[in-house]
Length: 244
Figure 1: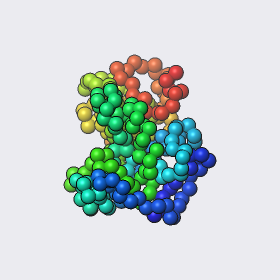
Figure 2: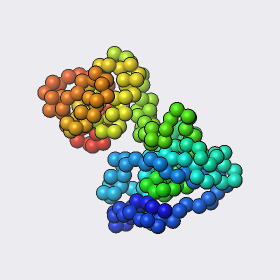
Figure 3: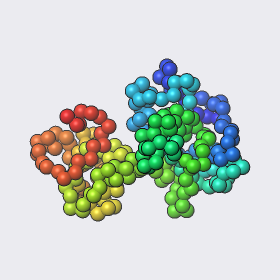
């Protein structure tokens, strides 16, 4: 099958026409035919050698993906042809983090076994996934829309951490990349209107403007000159320089 493969030792990315197609190994495995797979900022850091990933063998990256069920193990609950989205993170289900529902901190599984970082991911035509990391899509959600489920889960986690976000709070979003834009949509849907978005890239501000939320859009230099106070600041830049 075709795949975009990352070599963790040489930090090289390559397109391969004949990467091995995944096979069913466990009875609860699901082979997903990938339709949409995102490029996360983490992927960029992995390629640059700034984020830990599998160095034992080259593998397809991609932890934000959706598609349709292509093949299932004999004990799987999914059916061939179902539209699905994949949760790239797993859980050991035994440690204190997992017992509390914080399996992203699990030292056994979690970030140490993520699909698309430590295991073959969605930058390929097919991907093998344990069925407990597969979610069926409702009829009203397309696989294209479902490609945003993983980044939206990051926004959802942020909502949980920042809650309660009260309607009427003065909110600042710093950075209007994909995560910043998803925050814009989520806040607007929740009824927030006193929101300022700060972004240095004018083309990104134009994308936010097209959403027609009515949010205030400014550049960082305007923000620094105003020295306004905000009830909530949401950092979506992914850089340390904004926190100084």
